[in-house]
Image 1 (cartoon, one colour):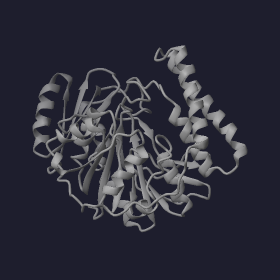
Image 2 (image 1 turned 180 degrees about the vertical axis):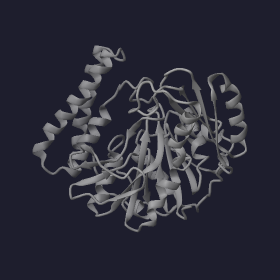
Image 3 (image 1 turned 90 degrees about the horizontal axis):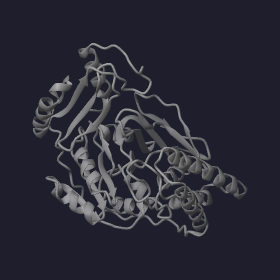
Length: 408
């Protein structure tokens, strides 16, 4: 068990339902000493206050569309040794924080970042990546069973995802936190570059996993169709101004990004998720954002002061054992009821329900604290699995529960 105290910061705006689910997951973290800080708009604060453990939360009301400012307010309240970040549309695995914080026992480590699973709860959105001074990200090879401490070469940084990262509190506060010039997008990447330029190491922690749903926002619809690229363009331009001194490269880099976004928008149109006019309007927003980014003020960072309140330990609801329930599709109701009963008493419980089909698998976290996986007994779970494969029921349960054993 780690001895490092962590402050978990969650920023939320316009998504009270997903915030409540995120908090339900954070409330069941295992093997970690932590406090929870929520920076949210009025509806988000109300959603947090409606939860049974609301008195154990540090709540900060904030309603501007600037994720960097919001995160800095969270850092200002953080009294832990490290500050961990997770998005309001994500849910952590029970041992997420335990794994994410442990590498800080190495004095060289300034920051950590974990792996991110996507909407089906199985496939990965992001693993290990590095980023260069142009903002381009590249896959990095790391050991996927233990933390890897990296000090990248000059001009590169280890990229951490804003929904799954942690930084030493004193270092982050001394650097002024996140740059408010990034209202959305590349905010954590800018921090990664600043850390790397100062010679700090970052640990990639594969077993620190979160599930990220890409919930609807003012920039995308429920089916993940992009509707607004203004801040993407603005942040890209700010990033180039700060980290890419060769201005001759800027036009080509902006054009490269614009073409990539256009391809994505055209694919949305082909898929029936956008109209032709939407492509034109959204790209115009990108262009306007780039122009604004050329002159958006970038002011010197101001250190964030010590928190006004002391560390407020959160009493995790995961106070019991780790258990697995499994059965065929016709027993799912009974299994879910039994799992909910056990979760109520502090058990970390996973339910596996298989049909006699080859349906693909999915994993989701339920508001009552249960991890629920369903799919065909002979269907695919991991992306590289065959579409159909023969399994005995007991072997399939063993395989699927073993896949998540390290993080639950």
